[in-house]
Each structure stands twice: as C-alpha cells, then as structure tokens.
Image (cartoon, rainbow, N blue to C red; front, side):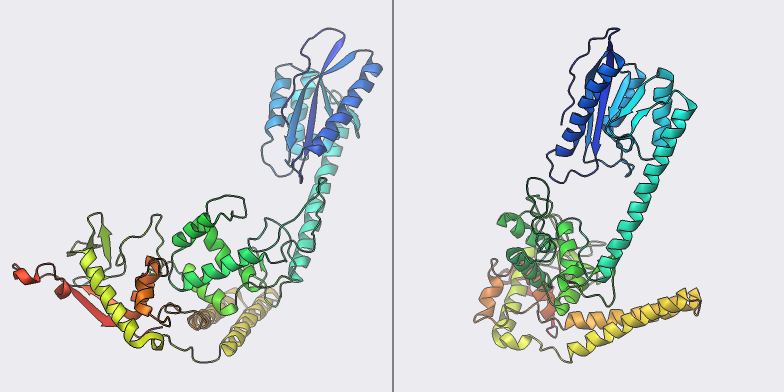
Length: 496
C-alpha cells in the first residue's frame, strides 16, 4: 500500500495527524490487516475531532506491511515517520495499539525523545491516550512497552518448545515449501485449506525429478547439466525462480527429508521417523551425499560453464602426476608447471575407442554386483549413532569429561564414516548402469543425448586411468603425423 497525502493545509483549527499501521505477517499478501487498522484509526480521528473541537486531518499514512517490530529489521516507513516528526510536519500520531509502534525498550525511548520536546500526542484505538509530556505518562508507556516485550519473548519460547515437540514426533514445522512435497493452498482470507497435506504429500512430478537427478549424480553427471535440464523443463524452484542453480539443487538432493529423516539446525534427530514418505532409498541418499559433499570429488564437474573437453581434470601428467587442464586452444596442458601439452581431440578419440571396445567386449559384466548385506551395514550405522547419543548423555550427567567425550566421539565418527562410505558404494545405481547393460553399449556411450560428457568422464574414470606422455624428440615419419597413440597411456581399472 503506498502512502497517501490527503491534506497539507495548516491552520489553527486543524491538527495534522499521522497514521501508522503495521502487521507482522500478511499471509494473503492483500494488505487486509493494515487496511482494517487504518479504518479504525480514521474513525478515531473523527472522534478526536469532536472531542478537541478542532479538525483532525490525516495528512499521511505510514504502512509497514508484513514487517515484525520484534525482528530487529529496519522499518522504513516507521523511520520515515520519525523523520517527518523531527521537522514538525505532524502534531498527532494515531495507531491501532502501542505494540504496532514499538515492541522494544530502545525503540520506545527513541520515540519518546522525538515526541516529548515537540508535544506530539499519541492516541491508540485500543490503548487510549499516551501522554509522553509527563513523567506519569512516560511511565505508563514504558510499562506497556515492557509488557509487550515480555509477551513477545514468552510467545517465542512457547513456539520454540512446540516446534521442538513436533520435530521429535517427526512432524513438519513449517517454513518454505520443500521441493517434492505439497505447499499450502489458501483461500481469500489466508486460511490454509490443505493443512494436513502441507510438507507431507508428495508432488509426483517433482519427486520424479529428484529421483532422476539423484541417479544422474550417482552416474557421474554434473549439477550444472541437471540444472540446465530442469530449467528447460519449465518447473520453477520452490521460490518461484525459472532458473535452477547448482547450489539450490545440491541443497535439495542432500537433505535428510528425501529419505524420511528429520533434521533440526543441520543435525539429524536420531530415532525419529518422519510423518512424510521418503522419495529415495537410504542407499541412494548415502551415495549422493558421498558425492556432493566430497569437496575433492573430481568426476562431477563443478564449473559455472558448460564442460567441453572430456579429459579436463581427469587425465594425468606423466611428469608430475598432476591433472591436466584444457586451454582455449583445444589443448590439454599440465595444470601446475606446463610440463607438457597435447591436442585434445585426437587424445579423446583414442580414449573413446578404448572405452567403446571394452564396453562392447564385456558389456553388463563390467557392472559389479554389490556384495554383503546392506541391511547389516545400516544396522551397524544405527548402533554407532546410538553410541554417540549415549556418550552425549554421559557428558551431560558428568559421568564423562569433555576431552574423553571428544576422543570417543571421534573414534565412533571415523567408524561411522567408513560404514556410510561402504553403504554409498553399495548403492543400487552404478556409473555403468544403463550403458554397459544396453543392447549396444558403445553406441549409447557415444550418444551425447543419452550419455552427457559429465557421465562419459565418470565412465572413463571407472574403467581406466589415462596418462599423457611426453612426446619424443625429432619429427615423426610422414605416415605417423597426427597419430597420438604414443602420447597416451591407458591402464585398466576394475569397474565399480
């Protein structure tokens, strides 16, 4: 709602009044709450006109919609009103209640310092007249402010306790709509019509996108490539943006909610089962987190631009064993000291030929069948987590010193990381799934639509190690010009 200047004519029979209205949460976004406050304040202006025998003219309305006085964030219209009072543009403040003006002692003191020397009166629809020109009136104002502050703090504690109880029961406590799950549907008055479904009911097409993205990440595709696909699909982000960013996608894919776990302030609550259904399996959850939370992971491209060359940060330099980088001249160069360089296209062609030959020969045999019982590993992980909780209880009861607690916890965390890594490696998905077991795996591997370059890199990394060798001195024979097989060393790996 924009401010409105209704009358700026000043005379002895006119009292210039400001109306200040505020609502903490405008759930509908239509400004209905502040409109009701303004209407009541205008009625109050009419009543005061009859009481004073002078015309009370509302010269301006200051509106802070969807803004809390307790949050500490600057209220632009409130500050503008104080500025107008300092230069003498008004003699009367009208508000619905004192807590609409301020809910902290510091704000109240500033308000008194502005109003007291200028004889600015304050009248509220619900709290009556605040006479800030007398000690008794200021005492009343300060008492009202202290009571409002107490009410807010007490309400904050009560809401926090309610949310914590809800979390321990596996319930959703609100916030932004989690992608993949239903959001609130409201009527014209802001009433939620699907309260039981909010944050709990799965949105099928969004859940399918999450499942597909998890499979693609496990298969070696980059977040950037997946974001391009999601942006092209036209499905907006939870905040309504048309463009998907890797950071947003990463937060969605690694969140515990996807597997039916409840997290509070970044920590998963042990022994709490969520009321909402999971989207992915536990094995997929551990696998995608192992990839996306590994800062040293190099088979998934993290750059801000589209990846062009397959061997960037994948092929090795034979001189220093560091990784090769690509330059703008379609050339691979040693990343550190430029020990050597080689043209990219023929090297990639040699690697592609090797991979295609191996896929054609071995096919689905390259996909390792997971060994061991994943259920036993999950049980072991749960036992280790329970042990950490037990140590925390012992620390809280004084049975264990903090140094001893930290030593024991670090040992258990090391074991837990190993178990989680084992679980991730036993994911039902594989980098080679969908390629090695295809009817024509070489054709699928070379098809950029079916196998993006990020996944090709992951497949190369799974099947072999590529090392770039130094070229021999002297010129090559004419028939070997353009043949780079002497510059490439390919060593087999056991597929995973």
